[in-house]
Image 1 (cartoon, rainbow, N blue to C red):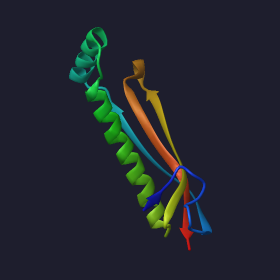
Image 2 (image 1 turned 90 degrees about the vertical axis):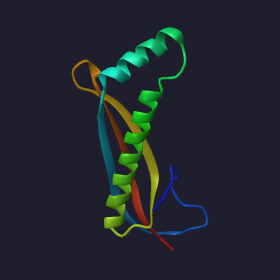
Image 3 (image 1 turned 60 degrees about the vertical axis):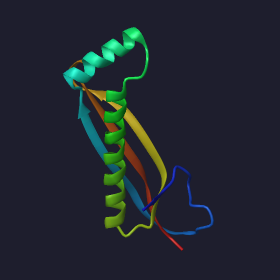
Length: 106
């Protein structure tokens, strides 16, 4: 599935708009990841545990969005947008949402 943040695909004509498609993934904070992130905040550096978790959640959300588009017969998803939100008590969870417009191309 072709995905793009732009409103169209270069050198391809959009012949039909099939509607908005979405995918979501929610990840919970893990106690050990929190501890190591706290240490990283003190000594500096990157919190790779959180980065990996967010990357995985983003991939899941994009995959679900593309699966929905494919089920509608789309060739591509354009105007893709990724959103990140904190959820839960004390913001203990992170939600990643991918959305875009499923289209047929010529």
